[in-house]
Length: 162
Image 1 (cartoon, rainbow, N blue to C red):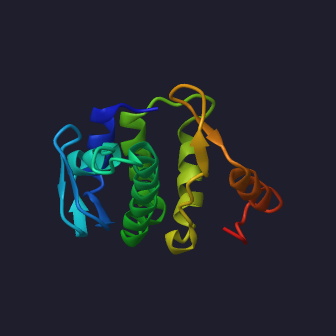
Image 2 (cartoon, rainbow, N blue to C red):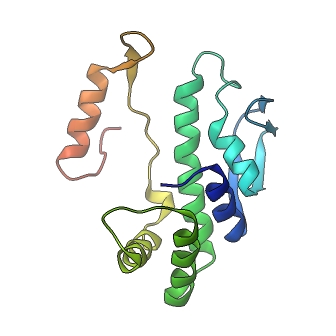
């Protein structure tokens, strides 16, 4: 678990994250002011990108979730491009340890998870939003399409149909 200052510090300590903005994002509350294009985002910029929901009037919370997934995949791509190796992964583990609170793991576990994550090709990761519809109050409800998505994923953790 981290907080906003911890998130900002981690992104800044890894040198920023390269990410493609696919549509205009202008929201005073989150701090976005992006035209479409490729950006090297600082921690503050990536936090704003990840929090913006007002640039999408009808799908704000859903699009924010999509953008957060894009930010995670972009961070993985940025870290892999640095080709950190074992020593670099140890440095990344120390960066993480300074800015997060963990439960049920230690630094060795975080290091091992980091080495595993760096072995994943971000080009093979799909960012899929769970299909939702209106629910009670401010809640969203999963749809039959969500059940199909979960079933597709459940057998082997690979999406064939989505």
